[in-house]
Image (cartoon, rainbow, N blue to C red; front, side, top):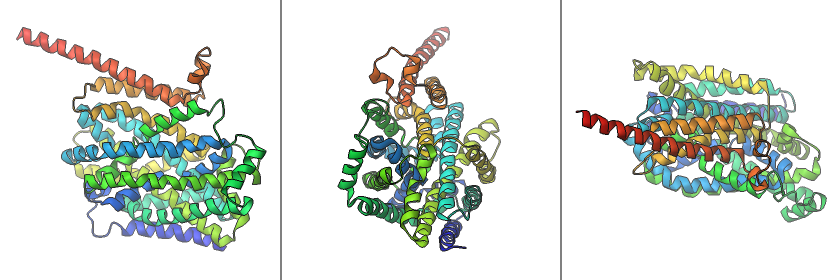
Length: 492
């Protein structure tokens, strides 16, 4: 066993021990397991939010996309900051409503707001599909990290299996508490490792960040700025708007909100979170540093840039430290995703069709489902497909289709009906799925429209259609309902 592999395994074991230990002294009923008894302060809310945001994508996808896509990668920093501004106003309202009605999941929120359990089923299905995509991203990243940093001693497939089994155990036992405590260790390590690498590589290879950009500009003109076509300013703007709106539409964001002790903790979290976006810049610097050092990589190969540069530059013990940190970066968000998928399937789908199920039975089923969901995630992980950035974009485009119905529900006088919400989510979800999975662009469908529209992110097109459908169907169904009420009144 080399020192690198030893450190990777050590970090894995420590994360499992922390995860299991965190349940000590707590009765793991459904509310405690899923939302921590609604008693978490600013620090843990912050760490949970960071835990879901700073994942294997921070380690691999961000640097890999900077390497392959250049200036387009800065959209991530932009939409992350926009999202936290939105969260400052929306999170306290969500928390207050959830506490009043004892909500557990994102789907519960939609059910209560629109008085429709079947809308909750649809929201749960959308959430499950998007979360499985994100779970696949974490497991793929875990495999890449461990295989590379163990110098091939542990294969990607074995690493994914071991990681999946470990995270399944501590999720079943500890729920959200395991994720919160493991995040403490993970976030400090990611902060240190990514910042160090983002500073070290530009200095080591180029003498500084500015000389690095100058060298790239000389070799590949305009690489670090937006191109005229494709991922240009139109794509950038539409992606920032779309992802900023959809950033907190993920089902695993809602337990973090529900778990807060009070509204003040959520507002403090919104103020602090933009600082975390700065960490991504250092991951970008790693990718840019590799452009001239390791040229010619394409597709998913670019996701390994950070690991390849590290192995060429550092001793095995430090590579092992990077690998161990990467393991934590995969396990923490994976634990949240498993927990949320299980809760949605049990409480918001199964219980709707089997209403006689008691809360005690739900609490048991939700835990027993975790290993089944893990196996499903493993199946899609090994089936292959796409770079980490590509998977993330598809998942974002899909989950954002919940946004119109969600934001309308926060209005004091919400005119949207359950039928409008259903129709909007379905139309947007189907459209974005067909276009994303089929690699269909607006330009292919409508070749004669202006170029500025062709370059829009397909998700924003689907979101626009979704919003129009929500408004139109809501106005129609509201009008029909009023007519029926008047007719009934006349008859009586």
